[in-house]
Image (cartoon, rainbow, N blue to C red; front, top):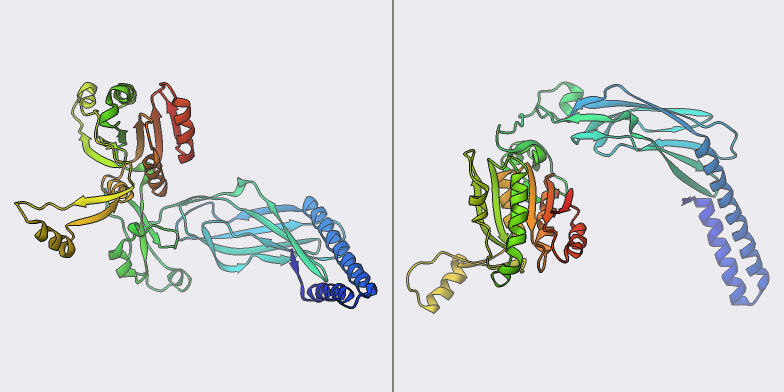
Length: 406
């Protein structure tokens, strides 16, 4: 709802009259102010009543000139709206621009006098399926204007594939020479490049491509089409190994035995402590040999800690302090940075997390969030032991694609 200038003037007049009645103790002013307010309120509700009536009677038809395009191509969208009946207000319609596109040419608004139509072109910026949002119906009165969204089902989706080359809007419109092409290196795990937005992670910026193009571009990774799956095993603490290690080994053995685990990556963590990484090559590796790597470890529950530099020899304490101040002998780093570096280096196609569900599990949420940012599907398994229902309740907040107890 929007108050127009005449309506704003009348509202201010009603407020001033009501305040004057209280100040001068003359209730005639107050009654006049409330009377004007009542008229405005009736006008507003009458506008909303007609808006809902028009929205329920409206019919929308839509057409696309192309339903299968590549990123950066232009699609023409046409939409017709019919609103039968007579209304005491001016009616207009606005076709909501689909998410993942931007206006190229044309207009997405029109006046509706029984019927109206819009025709405009959009540039597809994102991969995947782009669905129409719907049309916004707007009634324009003398004092107020209000609108309501008429949603549409996804019958006219636009399927957008990754682009084969890069070209800007200027080259498409005027036929000028295309700028330097952006092509991902085969086998690098990079699916495509797109312009940087403020919601993107700066770790994904490709500085070489950005320098060539004169603007920031980020790398889009293959996500679920990446390399092999990554198995992440959350080991229990050394002090609690007798209670938690055997159920965890049962889960790991069940996951490995249920599928082809060759050419996968096995990552062992204990809380926020990265214990080790092992790539299971194509050769036949018995499951029992892999389970030998599953053992208790020192568990770190701090998200941020210090990494000590590799200094050899017997050094005095004073020399160590000086070296620390000038050469970064100790530097702070985060578990999240380690996880992002792990994903960027290995490019997993999917992640299977196996945890005993003991103690603080915020580090599991960090892994799930980092995987979600890269479009990697996550699968979390915990042993079906005592108290597993409470662990499932904690892990559900991290929004895994699959969460199960084995």
